[in-house]
Image 1 (cartoon, rainbow, N blue to C red):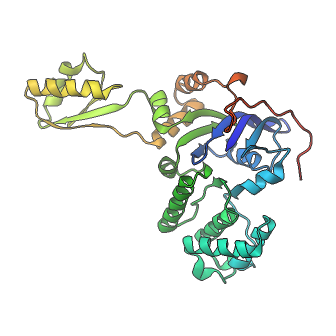
Image 2 (tube, rainbow, N blue to C red):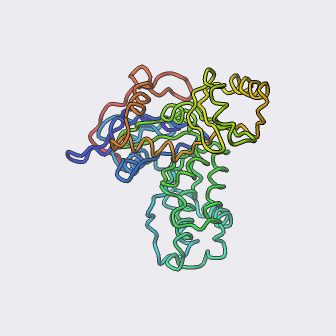
Image 3 (tube, rainbow, N blue to C red):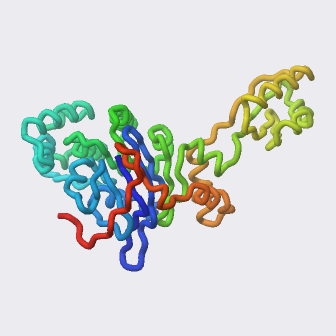
Length: 350
């Protein structure tokens, strides 16, 4: 659905995005994360055929973002962090207006507007001017605007900003439904919990480059090491004495007053052996569970590395372990053949 290869954007001497390569499949949600100024918004604007890339190329639904910019825009629903609304318009009129701009006939845009306003709990406010809406309601009407033409691809920039918990839940549920209908979604957010719930894959961008990409489990293991497991025994004093019993099986990470933690790459094989040893020595086991590691742990580890707070080897090793060469370009979704780079052009379509 989305293919980009060595995409870059330069403003004068400033490189906002450098050598960005990614692919998003039908029904997939990719969360693009990074600090302010990392290049997220510039990336979205290029993929949405709003900005012309300086280098590289991209295709959306098979259409080139420069040569076929108008078609690309018709395939994309875009929600920006600060959506500009025509505050004096009434909600229903506003949606019909944008439906017309997107080439929809009046009857179809009216039907879509009714469905979406009801879905996002805005039906009762359909005849109110937009300047009377709360911040959360304005964000929802902007999302409805992005969905009015039923696009196969959505670019969502901070979609739940300023929303109350109930409204945010409505939006997250809608994103889940869209993914189930094979919509592809590029999500940018600072809400890491939201990204963790919604995204199939994570890409973290810093300084205009994607430095890490993969599932949360993949990048967690790469950057934070093997999973950590915690066992708890009935007697708190036993945690110190049991450590020598396990040292030949696993590296001990930490011994607390009521727990022992160790790293384990193959828990299916190792944990039964640990339980057997504890039982043989008559240690009473209360619990054995993996210590959860959140997306926030991974994200902060990466950003700290890039800022020089911690060693950068983990990030560098990950980035260099999955190089993208011309022979590993995105492939055509229909034929499975490698896509050739699009020649550079001087003009962007109007």
